[in-house]
Image (cartoon, rainbow, N blue to C red; front, side):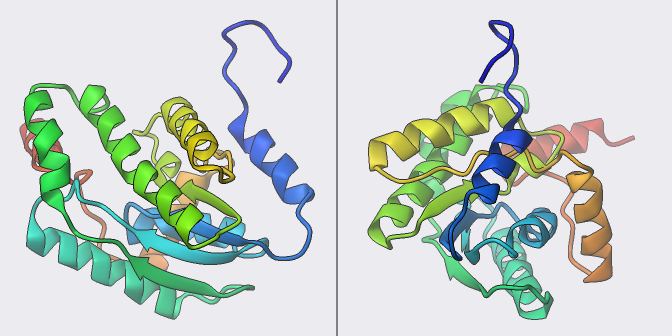
Length: 211
């Protein structure tokens, strides 16, 4: 892209360029952090892709919370009308894979190095599934949240796409009121919206910030 050195990339524009050049209806593996975040993303992309929502979130280290969010994700897919098919694929639930590293980053603030590791863990598995299941593209819902760093997410996704020989769909789904749309759709479908990202570390930080 052109622009000043160090200037942030416009990931929304980069995605729109890819969408405009699509031929047919390619298959997209969409990593989803939760049902509410996936609403606006599915609404945005289901006209262009045959989507499989990949629910892989070992960062949710409370089993009951994980099951609740997974069930809501699957319920949403069953309710939400889309131009092209949307299906559900649940990854292995292995919180030990997250905790093995995250415990050493327990004191990191939300949005810090622990989150970078978490993005990479989930996207690496998504890239691998994309290659093994022969999807045309992969991406994630993570950037719909104003709390998530689209710059880091896209850097990780792009690097993994290159190492796995697959295509990454650039995105910043919070743009064009994507986050607000996700809130509206979550209310419309009566979805459970959690008040922390997923891991016990973010939950403790969220609890400390409550009045």
